[in-house]
Image (cartoon, rainbow, N blue to C red; front, side, top):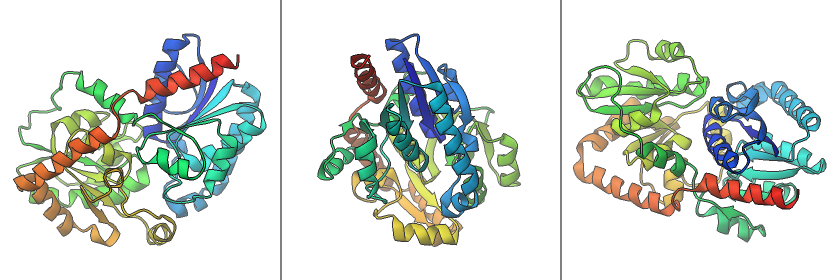
Length: 370
């Protein structure tokens, strides 16, 4: 079996790697050519491009780099045509992947889409394209199956793939963090793209001096040089640990998290958090007009209410961040209420096994057509 797999971000690299691991159990001779990262490469994928070269954040950044993006799409199409896979597996990353889905469909190549584009939030018209060019769509949020059914499309709810990774993490002994600092930990997750790290991290660490009894630990993404984090941190009382986000969360009493998949990862470890977002004025103005959802964090979207506090744009100030962090650390009743809601969230996500379920469907579909 030959698969062409595309993931454009760190989270997609993780989920695609877990899927490849499951597929190799069914076909040890599986050949994979991929756009992704180190985790996919670790599962034997031949990497065409790394996601760190693909991540453009926000409307203004996309416009600025439009020529590069279009060149990447054109190169990807040529590469697929030359390699002739049995199927393409697209993981999230909709702006790029939906264009590749259209191309693959035109070429008669089977298209599997793992992790639905968030068309329920914006660009609802994309459903027509998905219905036309995607052979099978796997969704990971509990409300998505019904939403797509209302749009006239049958999809498969497989549960959230983060549960697979976190279940595996729970089987591993908890390792101590570097150093001998005995203070309780506040995890700081500023994102995985350089531009968001540069924007968010100084704001997040503005709270550190107000909590001298806590150890502020920045979870650094492996794809970003640790020296970059240290340059951004400057003299702030915080430390950087690379590639050990889950260890940091397992040790943490609370977390400061940039909006994105990390908000859900943090929640699934049962860590009370404050969700942070601050974009450029242009990006925020456009997002307010285009995105039709009541919350920015997956935690609150899934639960349908504000379980964790969201500090967005002008609300994200050092004062507001410090006030919320103080509540998370020191208001016992507040902490317990959040942790009960996070336990309910875990239940709603349907349990582990997403990677196995998707692998089964892909394998059976391709075997039947062989």
